[in-house]
Image (cartoon, rainbow, N blue to C red; front, side, top):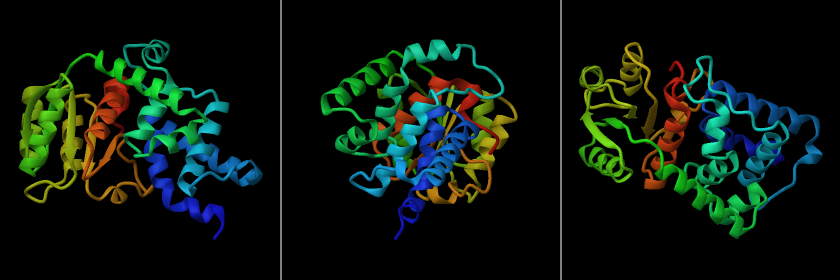
Length: 263
């Protein structure tokens, strides 16, 4: 099997990572395209790592670093400048944090990808955690039809210092609650209690307000097809607390304008 064929199963998740890292699907996919083009034009640049997945992410980071890791925030600029946000949390710290939480790489694998020692990686993760703890608190609406999962998310949100605004299990209830509560962040399942769609609920909500959204689903591959606009922030069930923490951090970091594109 060729190296390219080995990479193919991991590309949807690399696209998810690139979107989370840059804040938009458009920007994330641009870096993926640049990586694939470089891979095609100069396959000799690929340095095989411990696994095909690590090799792919390692190569992506090589492209990311050589292009200057320019962060984009979409057509509508958020209130804080990109420079101010970069000062809040440097890109390399976000990379280390997202690799070990959102993407689930081990510490050793993250060291391979970033070219860092174990001590350097731990320092980056510590810095990321410190900055995340300083983020401004917000209110969070949870759209989830499984009571136990909803309760777990509410507890996690409050542990992070945010306010649990309320929960909804159907599209209609979610839209009504969002209009009434005007949350600063939404955590949303894809399949809701009455067989309605969480994506449809979010579309309705975004017609009324700008708010970052994190989708949570047991079937991420259904949304990572590349055939339509995809959620910028997507968490796989069952999730780890740190994975949710990473996604919340990124969504709030980029702000309302860049956190969700048209779904």
